[in-house]
Image (cartoon, rainbow, N blue to C red; front, side):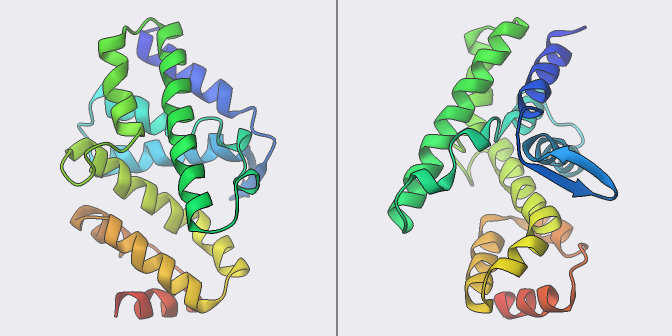
Length: 192
């Protein structure tokens, strides 16, 4: 087994510990394991020649996310932003530790952390590919559930923000996704 395969296996084993389960097309998965698989798929779809750092980052972007639920932070935007920032550092650190176990050295780990932390977003091609892929995972696999929990105004606001985070390749891929009638209507409202 190569270092890359070992690292992927370590990431997947870690994410399979997620106590939250989800069903997709008749199969049940630990949630973060499922999302890691789908993020990896989107990254390879958007960037068929993706390098090792981007592939490793995509499989570990939200590693162990269930360990720090949003509810442990205060309500409101500041609480949300602090939660996201702390989570990103946790994900990067955990991915780095597992990569080290797989045989990677610090100079090889740092680019993966850079992508996970979304440093130089909009200026770093790999970081932007990751952002596009994250938005597409949300739209394809989480949006329908999100629709059930929130009012139209909030959904339109979130869709506007999601669309703004993506670049042309993300927009083109998102345009091919299928949504129910309400989702399609709200997407059209968000995009004006």
